Image (cartoon, rainbow, N blue to C red; front, top):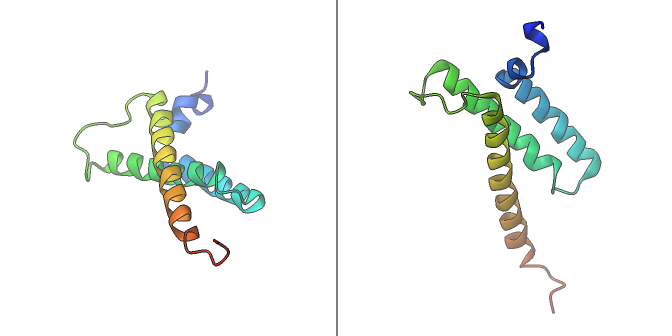
Length: 101
């Protein structure tokens, strides 16, 4: 099997996660719900940042993402954290609505 056809090869590339993040945010512009695609897109950017720092050994002395499924787990964790932050931000912003009686 060719190394470029392997899933683990693509999941360790920060460029792959940047492209996935751009595509997911573009899908969010079409959908506009702020529920699914935006947290995944921003989580992809944070995943790319984690892989970039891991490759250059700037912050991490050890490998946070060492197996291919760790990159999917970190994507899920980042997406959940961003989703809760977006929910908190939108709820805080909507409390001062003029239509609240």
